[in-house]
Image 1 (cartoon, rainbow, N blue to C red):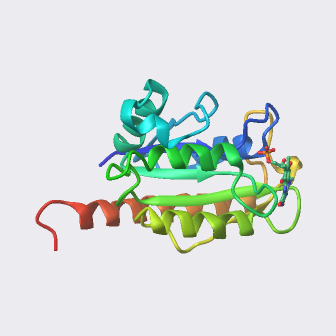
Image 2 (cartoon, rainbow, N blue to C red):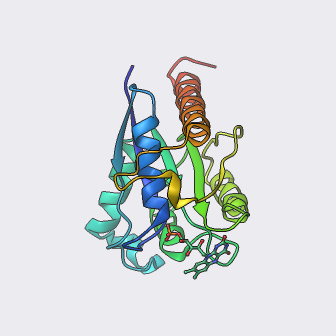
Length: 190
Ligand code: FNR
């Protein structure tokens, strides 16, 4: 079966290495996954004041999450945590109270840095947030990517066999995980 994956890129940079990584992951993913980006750029900064009259930007974000079978976060690490623009989008998706759009959505978290930490601390922050939001997460494999620009061509195609094998395996495991959670969530399944 085909699974609709909504993906977030946690960077607003025009030269984002995480956007390159997202393109590479999509190109290497199994055929049963169909990807749609969930944009975060135009969201206002969330405030509870919006809850009574939720604006169209927030509604569109929630609809996109709810229309997805699974969610993939491809994000940088900012100051050892989640970039503000991405955290803002997650806050929007979690509200108004009682309508958390992430509940029970299978999620994957991956990201790239120029340095050796490879977004590990951001990913750890994300796991706390997504746990609170009741979103199941692919626990293994983990993917902490130290971005080597020589490994990706202009279209995001991976030119190094080791990287290609690793990212392909990650997406195969992510796809299998999405399938498992969807099966567990299906009506009638205990
Ligand atoms: C960074 N960077 C960074 N890198 C990292 O590994 N750990 C960190 O905590 C931070 N902190 C941080 C804060 C801020 C405000 C910026 C702008 C950058 C460096 C970061 O990994 C690098 O700029 C990446 O290129 C960002 O990813 P994108 O935007 O290229 O996808």
